[in-house]
Image (cartoon, rainbow, N blue to C red; front, side):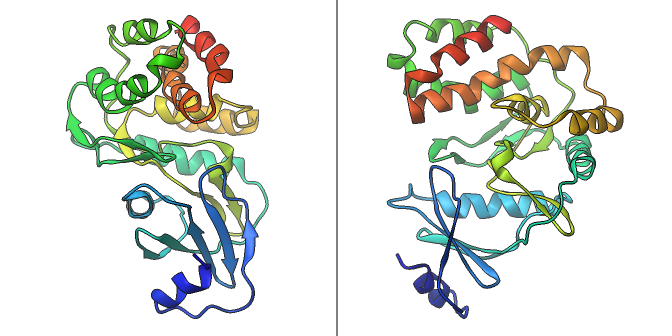
Length: 262
């Protein structure tokens, strides 16, 4: 679809020629003036509405995100956020504020990690919730490619994970889903759910991670207990299973390291 057609469908004025922006491995992203239009070839049903719900949930909890102007099965129209200077301490304040919030139960709506569908539901016991709503669907999807690591993953979640309490999470917090703006840091492309903050922290340590200045500020604001720190490789299994699913067996080495460190 031409991004201008989605703007017209939303009753918004399309000015100028669409400018391609980086959209990761899933979406085609364009800027038209004040708007960002996200499209994808043959997106799974519910992908863009789920992203819009996640952005709304983060905004309601005090996180800076782009405003959602329109969401449909065909695409998403967001506010364009201009680029600003890096502010890692500001990001630490925003995330510590998010992760300190407490909700009644662990909870997820049916949604996605990338384009991988994840079930919804809620629960009070963290390890069972995380395994059944996040690990198990990916484990089933990747089992035949894991070269015998599947039982090792299952065994990891036979012992309880540390639980500080149900907190709202971005759910896919790597550096590509962060944007620094003139008003401060903003988060993009959430896979929102209510879980344990270790899930977000684990993703922020993968693939180069966030710089030392961020971690120093975050630790000062909301110290990470030793048991949570030790559980981060176990949480990274979630994201590494997703990478095996999307990109293949080249991630089995990283998955093995995370399992061995858990």
